Length: 209
Ligand SMILES: [Zn+2]
Ligand SMILES: [Zn+2]
Image (cartoon, rainbow, N blue to C red; front, top):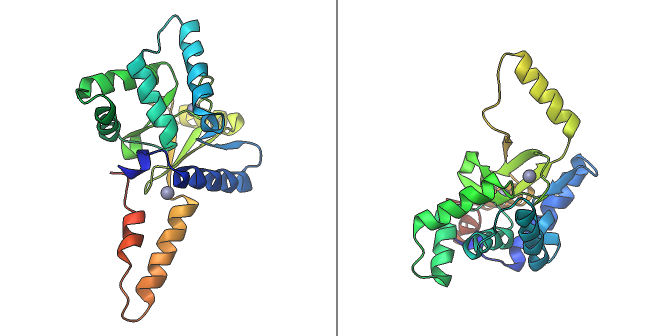
């Protein structure tokens, strides 16, 4: 899958998401690439030290899966990760990747993005305060809003209503700025007499799946 590849495009889209989030919540919203802002290697070293402190080990396979997610910079599906693993280690079996993902989840280094059934690196990497995730349902861009008061208020309301959240994740479905733009472009093209949406525009906005 294209979105899982480290590419200039991916980082460009992230700075967009970052700017966009800041328009709405200055100083409190972080694009999920926060960890990626630091060089990949230093993010990995940080994760490694964090695991060591917890008495756990970031094995080469766990490290590789984390690296793929860091490089992707957005929510990525398990089978795409498996495809990439197979390009590096041709014999990689699905359970290997799933076990590595389970470990990274339980260590709090990544989030499971349920609405699109994918995984994304936590923007705080080693010190997630469990923000509110906003997930582009089209491309898998994830922005983590860090508004502890908002989160607390929301959880209090949920509990007052007699519910308990099923997990730590609060996930909102959305369409990122970039995908809104490409959708608008497509609509504009479709509106032109005799012109159907260009195939490349359609490919650009293909869903994560
Ligand atoms: Zn997080
Ligand atoms: Zn998007």
